[in-house]
Image (tube, rainbow, N blue to C red; front, side):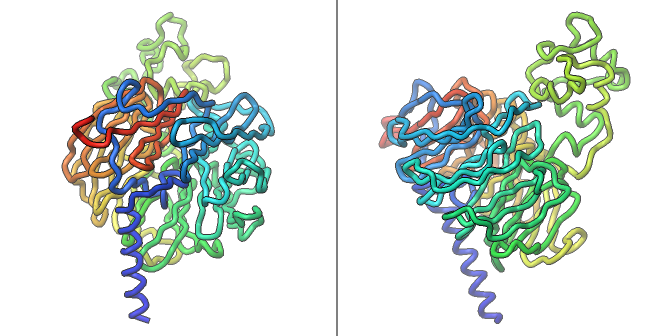
Length: 497
């Protein structure tokens, strides 16, 4: 038995090395192969933009789903009015190969400016491509666009869209259905859509985090983040292996891991409180006095340009407060009034803003056990998922704040460095060659060194807002912005760049 455990450990480490160093020719799901966010030893140009190293650019319909790639095809989810779109694009020249659509079940209203009905990134196994729309359900298409099967589902309750993406685990398609009429984690047969197993999720609100397959030194686990809880399931049966309670109350990040550690950082305003919540809705250069926090009239005076004792959306500076104006406008009159100010100063909601590191082998409730190896509470990301490279884990939070920690110990190599471009950081960072790529919602893509010291390499602007995570295949960078899909590729040698 001991020999078998040693062999399993060596195999897990070997598989992790393959994931980390390979140069994938496919990008089959959110964050690529294994959801590791790694393009291996591929290279992309350090300088690119609308007029430099641009292979092609095309207009695309609305949607925040990230592009995925299999062979010469890019697959994209989107929407046009009440149509939910599934699109295949030629990777070489940007031609649309086919487009299919399904109708939305009902009208949707969103409380975030950038939220929408096509948030979930599709996935593919090279035989079929699987699309998930919160207001329709699952649709499986063959790679030529013909229907394989579909599974209509009720819409999870969320004003922020349905951000969780399906993934493939061995011979199963896995989907989180938190916040629906039948909350559960589903495992389905990819060929037919038939249920393999269902794990109940009563009490969990809509998830914006996607499942992660943790291939550790002991076993393969399916890790799911939800409302104030991180759980591990047996991917073959759906049986609960372990749980860590009191994590974030509104998780948007997806866990990651290597053979020795599972890492999950998450921050949300709901798990903050008071001054922290208020300040998180504005640029960090905008400071509030104690008097402004204690007296809503003084706070309103700062933004109330027409002195009507209310704040219109246009009176707010570009900020998270402006993006979620509909959520702050509780009575729906298109004004933020004095009695609604208390929403941002209320005590913390459920859960904690925290990063947890888990070692393999745990069973049951892991809080206050040796299996929670370390915790970290500073500079946590809101949406951008963590990225592991060798023994480093990178965190990128709003306003371009970058941190790098030791995977094993949680000790920072550096903390709170600035990428140089503000805005929200919705796209997850990616490893490409010796660099880390991240993206600001303001339309900039930033490269910094994959190292224990922070060093900016380049900043590139496409002048269009970015929410989706890019894809990298064949030394080519594919970026979805709100209006376009871009392909950037450098020259054959550095001298030509």
